[in-house]
Image 1: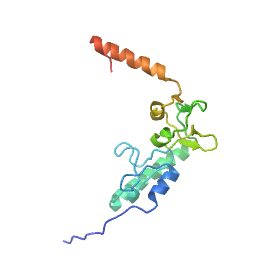
Image 2 (image 1 turned 30 degrees about the horizontal axis):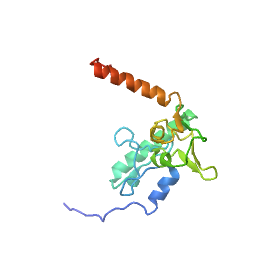
Image 3 (image 1 turned 30 degrees about the vertical axis):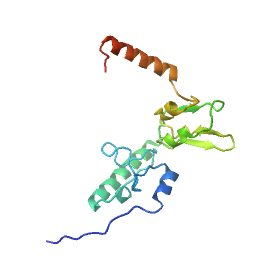
Image 4 (image 1 turned 135 degrees about the vertical axis):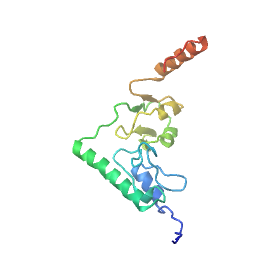
Length: 173
């Protein structure tokens, strides 16, 4: 029996730059992070981009091979379908109300928002947006709206729920 110690593994020096280019989030240590560690361990927040192996952190060969096979399977499934479905519920920025503060740019988990320097406003790439609503809630100018809902509708729903909760009426889950 023998124990062999390996030197410490570090992420690539340009991992954060690559992550920004392809819309892949990185951990504090610089490793790429998956969409969900248990439910979607090879997918990233950007549809169609998958990660496998030691780009996520140190792991052994069987784990790397299994993740590579999972990523290849996911890609093969996308190719077999021939089309990729995008999220129909996306946010929209009303340029006339946008102050150009860029808060939404920094908060979007899908890197779907870009700042248009020539216009001084932000722009949402509908192909990347997943309609999570983070930017809608964060916009101080209320220049961003979600498709199929607006701030007044969400406020009315919350008001109704809180009203029932105060009166002691059970709210169905």
